[in-house]
Length: 533
Image (tube, rainbow, N blue to C red):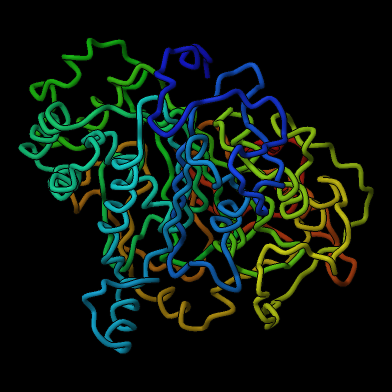
């Protein structure tokens, strides 16, 4: 991506205090506050010569996830961010769908029923999107960088929020009365609704861009009822899009939602003509409208989707208890944080926590991670391992005095890569029922028309098979994290090779999607994928 846009002039007065240049790791507040935050070292993700702009960070947790004894990567990420100075960084956290109910619900029994229905059908999804939107509406000022993170359905919420900002813009502060209308304009997919959304954006809103959208394993099925919201699949209002995907998730209701580029993004067309509704055919109104709006953005999204070993919660976290030293989820968390530094998001992190909690090498944060130096053989932890029951410590982020010192990122990654996979299809029996029922899935293709329901969806029985990865996604090859290669090279508990084979089923050329063998995976340059850091 070009850095030309980085040099645009922005107002440095955000209305939340003066801006300053961060030239060191040390921060000492002028106020008499001398608490824990005053002693923490913050790492700026921009160079010392670059004037700081305030960063607004929104974090959306997964279904049923909140701060508890087995936190997700969203909570881990939130814990490491600076939150003591709103003039430099403002951080928002939202617990996952199915974790809280309206205060209008009376009685514990009724609340449990509503939460269960919410987990199944995602009935509060619109509320989650609107609450994140309102936070931005109340706090955004010109020049702020917006960064959004999400896991599972929280990832879908994050992408939908970005889509809402693209379609209807951001309302000015204290315009709460217009928020229901803004969401109504966003979700409409009829021709009249699309015309009204353009007028609504011009009348009430401002244009904003998303600096960074980072998600862990977005699921395409948001509840038992499929939902399609505009600009979730493609959105050129995002500068950087990063997506960590699970190689070994194989539940029918956890098919991933991939990013795809606008098919017109390369065209040089006059912006006014692009947004003219006369150029949009009614039979494909949604996809062509999205392409036209996306194409009006001068920059193309820098999108990267990388696959990691593990099932759904091994990617987004929550598969092991808090304070577990090594697990698979630390790898995609490290990768996401490193991408924040590589793309110069400006997010401020606690330096010590990046090293101690996540295992990052602070000297190579915006570069390639250190090369692996550990020699063969590795010992792979295999089998079904259920998390042991431990009590939640009074302070989740206390120093881990019982654990060993920092080992270096290469060895930390090695031990994480050899950790067990928590396959919920094997651990939880009732998930298996859905594997033998016919379920409706949206077709995986570069451009789909949500209005033509019969052609864009198929019914299938999954039978526990791995995720299929079809044609348009394989054109440039899958991007697979280097830690998967480490796991492929490891020995199992009996000292044998070839114990790990990813469940994902790539589709090459005209043949059906199929699971590749260990021999096809464990090569330096596979035909179907590329190893990445």
